Length: 229
Image (cartoon, rainbow, N blue to C red; front, side, top):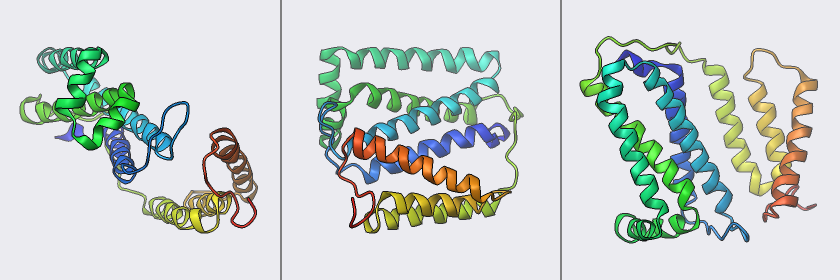
């Protein structure tokens, strides 16, 4: 349907996709606890934030393009069911039931460590999937998107992708700061304008912030500059 070609909806689905990928590749990392964070705690939390944010963006777009009948038939029951499931998961008995009978062994530890973000993200993603199915099968025909997707701009997409790949390759070999410098420089080349002073400023600010947050604040076992720190 045309409403599925909205920029906001596709952006939300993209965030959800990134969150799912992050959870998949970080599933074997130890979570630890909020007091003593393991290497997988921050990636999991960021993944749940991506899933929740993407779901909210997608749901907002679907809601704006829905008419009164769709909201009454689909949105109210789905919202009510989501609220019931969330409240049930917060009750000790309900939390134990979900951990033992609904989730698989690989997800139980994650649920016990961060049950609230886990359930919020899971419910929101499920709402997106359910509502998109209902809208596509029984929704109002001819509903148009608010902002249709334009043709993709391949230059920024390509440069940002190359920057991310370089960051991943350099992170363990050279350290956080060289990886950030490569990412920012290559991604900036994909923009309409390239101003060297702004790029250098971004490099300095992000390098300092990431060092303070991840190395000093969270005390994560990462290399800032290989062979130096």
